[in-house]
Length: 175
Image (cartoon, rainbow, N blue to C red; front, top):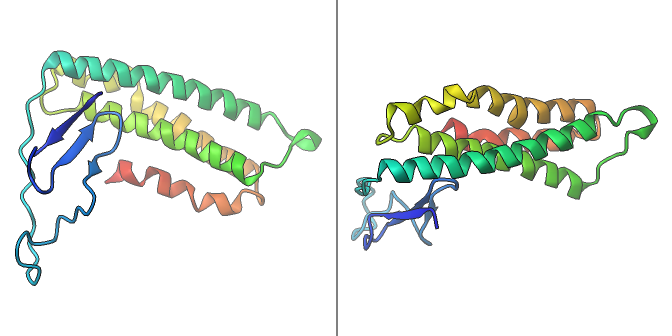
């Protein structure tokens, strides 16, 4: 598994995966005082274990492979949906909308994972340049965000309720 634990044995240990978001332990609350519940204080960030260059490169390659696979699926689905106009334009049911949202959200998460791996503090300069080399920011915008918004726009007014869901998909990337 491509995960490691930060602060092992600590009450607030966090499990981190490069291609997924951090998974806090159940009951995790960083603002809760460890012993006195009447005072609130921040808990220091746990120490992280060093990661080797080989491991970072392996992670980045694996994430990039997944990213390309999901990106190709998004392109395929978006092209199929965008060509359905006029009388052939079938309305999407709620499950189909949810599947489209999940697909584009997965693509954004894969981009996020790639950025985490390639821009890691321990990453070599060559690994850090991969995001630019492969035009990752532009691809994230074009396939992960813009194409989905375009699909929503073409499906108005039926897509109106799903437009409100769209910005929440990209919130983790802005944080």
